Amino acid sequence: MSRPPSRVAFAVLLAVLVGSGVVAVLNVSADADATTRGIRARELARFTATLPEPTGPYPVGTVAWQIDGTGRPDPWRPGQDRDLTVQLWYPAQDRGESAPWAHPNVARQAARRYGFAAESLVALRGHATEEAPVRRDAGVLPVLVFSPGDGGNRTDNTALTEELASHGYLVVAVDHLGDALEGSSPDGQLVGRTKPELPEDISREELTGPAVVAQVEVRVADVRAVLDALGRVAGTGPSGAPATAEHIGVRGPVPVGLAGRIDLGRTGVLGHSLGGATAAGAAYADGRVRAGVNLDGLVAGPVAVEGLDRPFLVLRQPSHTTRIDPSWETFLPALRGWHRVVTVAGSGHYSFADLGLWARAGGVDLRTSEETYRFNFGAGDNGRATELTRALLVGFFDAWLRDRPVPAVLGGPDPQYPELTFG
Image (cartoon, rainbow, N blue to C red; front, side):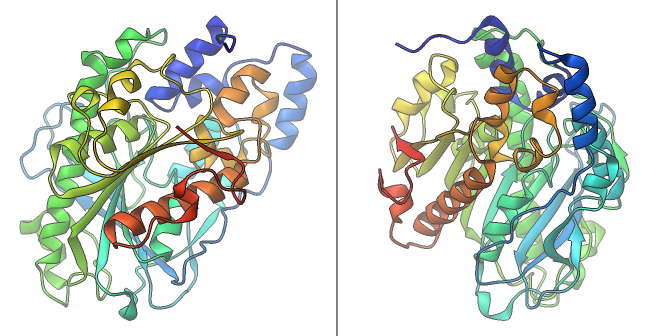
């Protein structure tokens, strides 16, 4: 029997299961030689952040939209409609100048929170071209809606969203405004976090309690609102011009060639951490969702007990088990459609987000204890973890939204992928 985690480590892992405990995580001081480690951390905090090139056959385009609440009250910002900001990635006709990873206002604040020099993220560019026309030979695009972790922003998982778009998907990542720590409007105006905070010492039992369920329900409604908005854009005709009109509740440029190419009949959802709970909840609540993925998150609400009858993939770090997460004790046995639970050896909670790619270069390992770092960022190569996650996601959605064969990476143990175990 494996040794249970220490009390501190247990608390850290509970925090990251519901979201972006990164603020607390990065403020944990290392046990030994703190002064020396702090000096080295400051030296390393100035680094050049990068993202891996997408591997698909298409260049990638991107654009941000505001989706008006259209009368849905916002429980986290009383007196306001539940407006959302989303970032779209899609196969582009050509590749031009790469867009920034995030607006400078967002990147600057995120860098400060992570303990990085501002320019490390402000200067970071992805691989997508802003407002590029949609690739003409990419066909009609299956839709994937992405929900980030608690406090997460719409560009936090760009290495994954760009990859899926390069393989022919329309990927829409959500800023759950009032939840996101650096949520913003499309033009970079920051929107503060107003969502009620969960207790820092949240217990194992409270992970499936009403406070977490209520937060997931808001996010699930957000995903459904995004699908509704995409339906309105899809019906605007080939020019896309009316999609900026107020009456359909979407504000922002519609890339040339998109309006007639949105296939809501092939819709998937995916999310990281609390976003993984959102993905499971959306698959349960909305019949338009045909397949879903949970990246190292818990599950909350009725789906945690009743499960799903459609394809669902769970990716996890080795420390995320039913011993830690009570929601998996009921959810995993209740999955009735095709499903896999895949463990990525050496990974941590943020190995499934862009932050995992930069944590060691940015000196995060020198500002935390070894135990805390391992739970959050793993003991392995996060570049390899990202590579494997991308292959698993593309293979999964290709199988269940495009009727392609289940690839070897998802078929079970394979010598090509020794880091993956299935259970």
